[in-house]
Image (cartoon, rainbow, N blue to C red; front, side, top):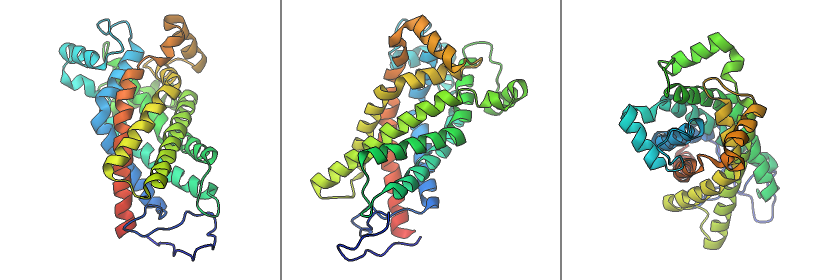
Length: 311
């Protein structure tokens, strides 16, 4: 990987972040391949660890009336599911999510890093607005390339598991949906997923970048420790949940086994639960995104640092 040479103070570098020493800084721009690989590794690690929360959130959004009277308690939901369906049930659709998360995280970081470099000023700085724009672009790209089809299959598997179980595996689910509904069946919920993911990534990446920059300014250390990266990522995950939960609820209903249109999904939430229904599953999603925010950013920083040092 080629590394830019730092120019003397006062000499502008065209639309690229300033390069710092490998051992002390973290602003050396990663190559596209490094961004993709680092993001994919971070995404796979995050999905593997946090999947039970994702299962609980999706199950609550799909069947809120059958969770033992406490749909907002993820531990009770998981305990009830394990008692009724076995421990393996809470990992229904997990392999699909891991593959999809690895791909989407790789696309997200690649697009975000590339877009940031394009939008940065001559000193490598980004305004908050441009950072949010980079996040929205990354979210839209990952939704189209990776997230919509994998989320559709994962959601259909979880929804299917509560009944007669038509789908035997992720591959079987995908082939059945393709045969019965065509490619549009795999991409059901594209609009709601793209809106949700654009908003989520804009808030998450934008907030993480802002907090990370504030930490660097305050501490004088531009390379946060793993613990600090985890903490900043967890805070970013918390803010993301409550800002974007309605989009996630609509997406889940649109991608259920039978699926609903974008408008019908909205109407269905209002009809059954009122406005508060748009935040159903937020407790489960909070548990996942707090952990995933910490995991994905700390793992990404570590892998990226390896590329910066040895790439």
